[in-house]
Amino acid sequence: QVRLVESGGGLVQPGGSLRLSCAASGRTFSELDMGWFRQAPGKVREYVASITWSGGSKYYSDSVKGRSAISRDDAKSTVYLQIDNLKIEDTAIYYCSAGTRGATPNPRGYDYWGRGTQVTVTS
Image 1 (cartoon, rainbow, N blue to C red):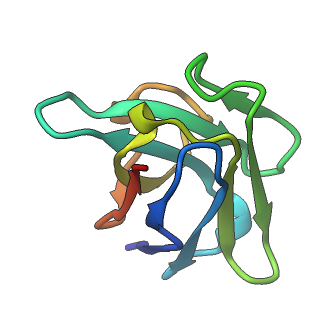
Image 2 (image 1 turned 180 degrees about the horizontal axis):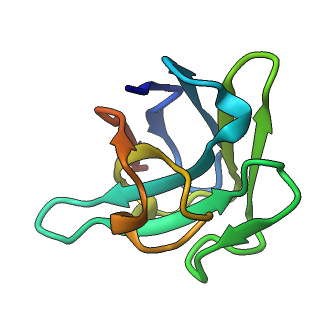
């Protein structure tokens, strides 16, 4: 069993930045592909970014490509998501996910999920 705990969300103005963190426990972190998804009120869960177990491949959705960066620190069993130039439409609960079937944009490819951290972008 893998436990995931997100942090780093909050209230930010448009154009600002946030770095989300997801701390994992319960399994060797370096074996896990990690992903970030988000869900806005009334909308389905949406893929944001993912990173392979080795950190060698990183993927992003078109909605955040060019203004975000996913990274991992295996020594800390933590994955990060930096988002810059935040927009109002980035407002959502951000969820961390973990699995072993590749850093897929399909949420069904992940076996473990955190409870999420709220990001609110507002002026």
